[in-house]
Image (cartoon, rainbow, N blue to C red; front, side):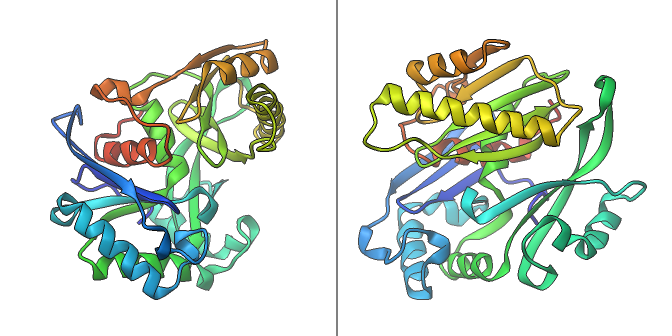
Length: 311
């Protein structure tokens, strides 16, 4: 379910503060057919996460979103699991087809994730993974999340009329938004500057092979201090990723997201003098300017899912 593709071009993101719905049309997903966003009324939440909300809260949240986004009830939508609620790993299962690997991986779950088969939902997809000398080999990218909160959220949404084409991690959705339609013969590092967390992504020949969230600096610090602290955290995360993915090499780093700025780019350039650093604005391909809020880029990546092609 986390990777299955179907003929629906709508993405829905529901976070702890707001929702975003985006629908694309056209042969290559080149036109925005509908969009909607809004803040969730604060009384809905006694906690800070959709996935820790109680059943009554969830029902009211999706009642509100359903009444606000009537387009979504006419389509099967792609839905994002927040970064904090999903995990991604790369597994090697030589000689197995995707179908065989999906069945076999249940016996390896506890080697890769902090929960067992009965506690989670998972799915996988084939990717190219870098090996020594610039070559690549076939592996599987596996996404997993805890079963009970996922079932509670999806059940509440379905009770309010939502139908789902797929469910996938927010990490892969934001990656698709910025890498869609591009060409990549080797490796790139992507830095998503979200509102709550930053995310480092290793992209190899169009496939994400490594994802790591990076916390921001202290809220009381100046913007320059926070940018410098984040750049240091990104550098440490990239070094960690390189130690775990020995065949990965890169010569460029792309910064994007609601908090991407010239100040952050300058700090990243200081932290990575050995490679080129650029900014990306995926929404501009559609003539849009996204506000500095979480959810829009994830919703774009979800809506592009049906048009996804290998980069």
